[in-house]
Length: 290
Length: 232
Image (cartoon, rainbow over all chains, first blue to last red; front, side, top):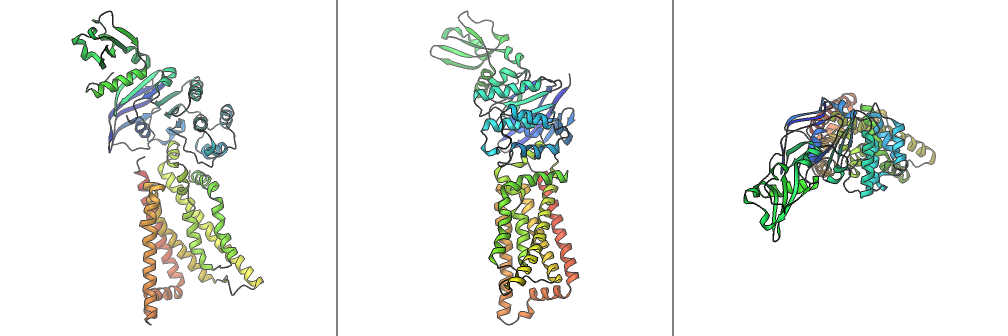
């Protein structure tokens, strides 16, 4: 299986933050969620992939070419935290501005998306709501037959209905062969719905890169009474929280044996994993989850 | 690619600034206070008051450029090219204004108020001085804008570029005025320089052209380096 993204030993140091020799791969044909807290390094990684930020060291390959090769961007659909169009532009101006740079630009597809998204062809960008702006950005990203979509928090700030609609658009995009999405977000519920691969960045380090289901099946939530927590198990619980009536936390499923029958175990969500990993980190634990 | 970048930058500018573009020549026309020398500030005003950098204030174009199949050097070349085209257009516009005002002056009898007549040598002098001023401002403005962007760069350009330049002009003017007051006008280096230039028009024009082009080239190379190393 070929990879659409290969990042090797990527390092970037900034004043109060650094990406510390990160490596990960994203296989072709997947929707990959790039998760992590705010400030974990998601946007910096994306900017490095797009050559907006300049790396200190490491290699990045996108669609089997170095990201320094400008032709890669012909096959990329990019939508950052907002589409950086001019306020005075209408969707028609957007097309006039973007079309000359893409050999495979398809005006029919662009206009179909505008109609599907109920975007007025003559409406100025500044008068659009955030949701409509993001839709216009997505229409642009989808109109030149891109093989890979790079999206940075595309659903952030959208209401649930709009977010769901955005996810449907991404599902439709994936219906065609040889397409992939790399989707940075901290709204993990979106990824529960559509992602099948996860890259998890935490404080500038990749702590998981693999199938979403494997990550979710690796852990479970655990809670029990005061006397249900054996001393030897205390260290195994991620993000352990003890209170008057008992304890709760998250545990690797390989360590669930040895608890009393009073202990309750439940499936985790991506959000649970992020929350408990963060708690673990605060308590001085943590590490690579791969 | 250069033509694509010029078209792109033009699209970013033309909508927001279309009105600004025509206000100044209209004001000059209707005020009746026209002088051919106005071509110098007019051309430079258009070249630097009307750039895609200004459009950045309402949307960061760099993120858009760098998400597209565009090299950083293409962005720099495109902006320099568009700025130079605007400069040339404003020189042509200025020349047209001279003709229009000449016609008005001859037919309405306002020659006491406006001064539309201009010789070829005067016109050549205006062109070369405009070019020099354009190149100097390009050196002061473009590398800073490419390094820092419009919102940060404009303050540095104003306080580090325009104001020192104006200060130098004021000092030179004051010095020249003082030499005149003290009755040694003929000894003023500026006057001597102007006299030399007017007597050796072709030589001084070529010299100014070479100096201006060198300054513009330096501005371009510095801008290219600044933008290649800019970390977003």
